[in-house]
Length: 322
Image (tube, rainbow, N blue to C red):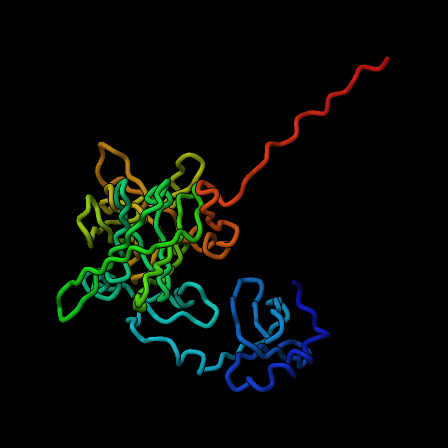
C-alpha cells in the first residue's frame, strides 16, 4: 500500500479521540498523520490509523513524535544495554552513537540471561532472545527436521542461576540458505524475557575484541573471548565473520558480541582440526531475515521450506513444418 496524501485529513479525524495516546508523524506541507507506529523501516514508516494501515515514505516525513504513554505498559526487566523495544519495533537496535567498550565480565552479567540453550532429540545448540515476548534466534541446522524443541533459560535470582525449561516452542520462520531460524516460546505463564540489542558489524575493524556466549558440548553459559580475524571470509558463496573466539558444537545459534554488548553475528560453524577458526553470520543478514520474516514463514505442512516451488516449464516442443 502506498502513502496517499489526500486521505491524511480523514485519518486524523478517525484518530482524534486517541491522539493523546498516539504517535504523530509530521509531514511536509504542514500535514500530519496520527496513529500507532507499527514498524520503522529505512525507507518508510508503517502506522495504524484506526481503520487502515498507512505506509509513509521517509522522504515525506519531517519529524516523528512518539507518545511516552506507549511505553508505560512495558515491563522494565532489562538492563540499560538490553533496553526496551520502541513501539512497533520487533527487535532492539543500537543507537546511532556507539557505546563505549566495557569489560566482558560486566557485560555477561547484564546480557547473559538473554542467551538460551536450544535442545532437540537430535542434539543441542544455543539461541538468544530478540524481544521480551519470547522470540529468539538460532541456527536452522539446530532445529532442522525436528518437531520437539525445548528452550532452557538461566535466570539470576539472589546471586544464583535458576534453570527454567520451556517445552512449547513454535518455529516461526526459517531461512535454511543462511542458516537462520526464528522461534517463539508459547508456554502458558511464561514471563517477559530479557533480550539483546542487535548491533552493526560494518564499523568493526579486524583485530577488534569480540566474545561469544553459548553452550558448547552442553556446557551452558560458556563465555569465550577473542578478536575479529576478518569480516569477509567467503565460504560456499556466503560471507562470514571469522573470529578467534572458541566456537564448538553447541555454540551454534548463539550470539557473537562486540565490546559494547551488541550482537554482531550468529555463531554457526568452525573448521575442525583447528583452533581459533570460528565463524558467525553477520548481524545484517539477521536483521534482513527478521524484517522479512513473513516471507520465510514456517509451515507445518511443508517443514523444509515455507513455499512449494513448482518445476519450471520445459522448452516448448515444435512440430517440424510440413
